[in-house]
Amino acid sequence: MGMDYYIEPKSETEYEEYLDFPDTLSYFFEQLGGYDEKSIVSQIEKILDIDLRIFQITYNPEMEFEFEEPEKDSVDDKDSEHDDFWINTDDLIKKLDEFLEKIKSNNNYFSQIIFNPDNDDSKTSGMDIEDIIRYQKENPLSLYPVNNGIITDQDLNSSISELMKILENLKSQKIEQIRLIYM
Image (tube, rainbow, N blue to C red; front, side, top):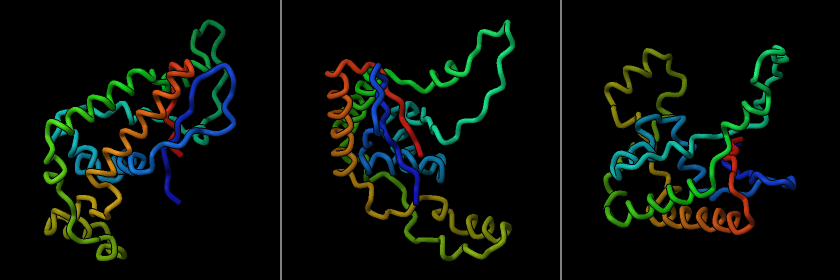
């Protein structure tokens, strides 16, 4: 089972469940961890000249650690550590709007993405690290993600619009901040 993005609204009343994050966008942003600068999101950032790092500000409640009691003179407390993960709803909406505008102004951006034409995972499984490195040097496209059809130009646009609607709905409910949950 893979990890997915969810949305946690910040409000006085606690939500029973996290809100769903569009699946295509969840997969899109999750890829960054596996392919770094060769991920689809990193390539699109370069192609469209946009910074999407705001979507990497993620919180995983299952990864919380026991914090030591702060010293009496310390102003830090456990809750301030978690405040760093809250993002202004308006900031996300603006970033998504910018993303859609950049896509519209460069309508062939998706054709510029480099994909791995082969699924090299089966070829490299069982290899030791030196053989994998040698294989990657001989096959540089193996470092890029495979185009498995999950992320397409249309699906990406649709997911961005879907997330904007979710955030606009939260904004209409006076939700000024959210956390992107990744688990």
